[in-house]
Image (cartoon, rainbow, N blue to C red; front, side, top):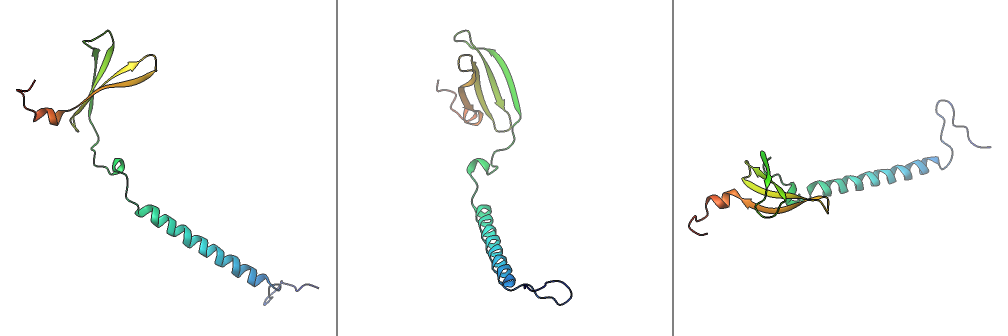
Length: 115
């Protein structure tokens, strides 16, 4: 007949204590391993794109017709980071196509006599 586990001062059935202790140790080891993995992931260096070195931009967009051909383009100027990008819509690929990029800072310090 199995032991009764009811009432005050009752003892667990034989082997239950060892079963609970073994599983409790396993859970503690698993939690310690998860904390270790979390620590490793947290301490990894971030990628350069995530470093936050680039300020949020203030954009101005102007659309117009290009000198060459009959296609239109959009000139996008980022006043904070001082950059300009030109894009156009590729109807066949149904996507924006980058045409050019300029650094306004580089242009500011460029020698104006070279053309």
